[in-house]
Image 1 (cartoon, rainbow, N blue to C red):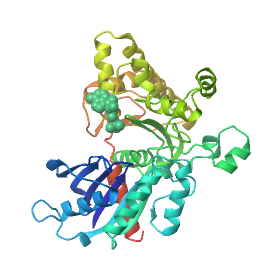
Image 2 (cartoon, rainbow, N blue to C red):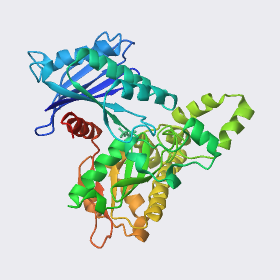
Image 3 (cartoon, rainbow, N blue to C red):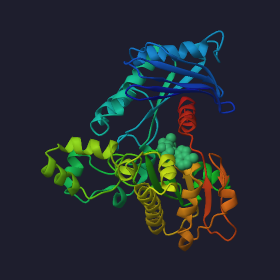
Length: 398
Ligand code: AMP
């Protein structure tokens, strides 16, 4: 079965075409700067076939150009667009409405639209992508996979906020989490690598990238996660504050006259590692500056390490027993020193890693040392493959 996975942003459209026979990526790429000056990139395997400026007035045009590239006589990978059996779309916010992936129906589209209130930057572009795709590929089955649905198994004591019930009930204010597709993929892969059923394992998954979240998974189901109503909560991130006293918002408002939404935007885009280091939100730049003796870069690095340890420690206590720990995403997969410096503190919960095995970047590897009671892994995340697997299952009627 040939499946197209689409991830639509406000001005971008990322795509990957899978042959599910061997789960191989036939082609992939990105259309960027949609409704601006337009740029499209198209790769077959790992080879870039083209990367060019091209007018992309809207997502519909971008989608059509993707299909044109995929079926092109010279560099295409399929001969007819009808070979695409199904399309899987990534949707950031599924709220409490969507507890699993769904086949797209008018009701599902209405649900995604309704949830735009809590994901104004993400759900509307996803709908644009869904509609553009339906026009270009009218015969393909459409599926939506939500970043939040994996976290829907959280118990009330994990997802509720301790504010008066009327706000929770009237406005659906609660913890939804994010990166759920990534946490699900790496935890399922971890169980597979351990030769166990996911229901037999308690796992802590650390998705550490530009945006970061840690998730506690109890017997295969999400028990708690560090992001909240929005991805601003939890760990310190590239440009996001992570958890902080909400009074900071009203205090800044009173002192500066900035509105609540201006302050929240500053907390999303100009804070975190970028603000503390004064240099960059990228961990590589921070490490480079730290090595040269930059004190603020050093504090930023220490805050990140502390933040990761904090959530792993908290979730170990919440779970009571941890069978495995997984690192994933840009930082989790590549930052050897971070993994070592985090795990150095986790001996109390039975984590011991092998520094030789840990000396690897971007590869799937078990880094557990002899005598460790917690199996520790680096597992490159693959949200697109997870979306393709769900899409195939639903298209197959499973
Ligand atoms: P992601 O959001 O998953 O793409 O992760 C992006 C982040 O990964 C970047 O901002 C970097 O901070 C981090 N990163 C990538 N490579 C490395 C590396 N070799 N060492 C440390 N951090 C890295």
